[in-house]
Image 1 (cartoon, one colour):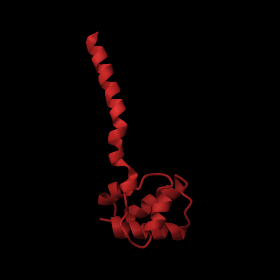
Image 2: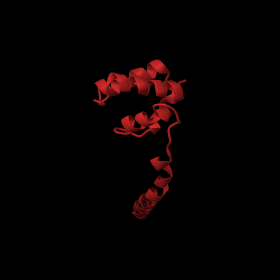
Image 3: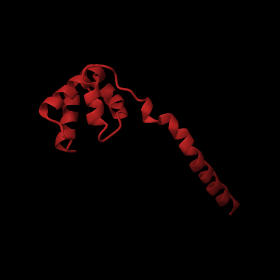
Image 4: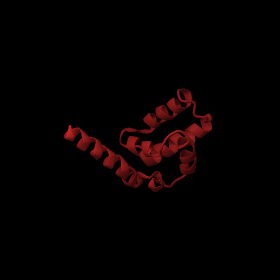
Amino acid sequence: MWRNHEFVASLLVASLTAPACATADDETTLALADGPGRDQVQAACSMCHSVDYIVMNSPIQDQAGWDKTVKKMVTVFGAPLTAEESAAIVAYLARRYGK
């Protein structure tokens, strides 16, 4: 019975300290690489998700991959981008985050 109380107490302590640790992952420290199209990518992509997805996916994406990803964001998830905006975003992503 005592072990159960110890477990609950440890979960409580962990939950109380987690927010303090989480500030290290604050997205305000994330910055996309400078270049033409960066502001457009920042605005369009962060509307739905964190820009860390861009950095995380960059090792596996080439221009064709980024094009497919952006098209999926538009057609499947409804990102409100014109064909010209999509092309500019793909160009930036391929140039700065392509393999």
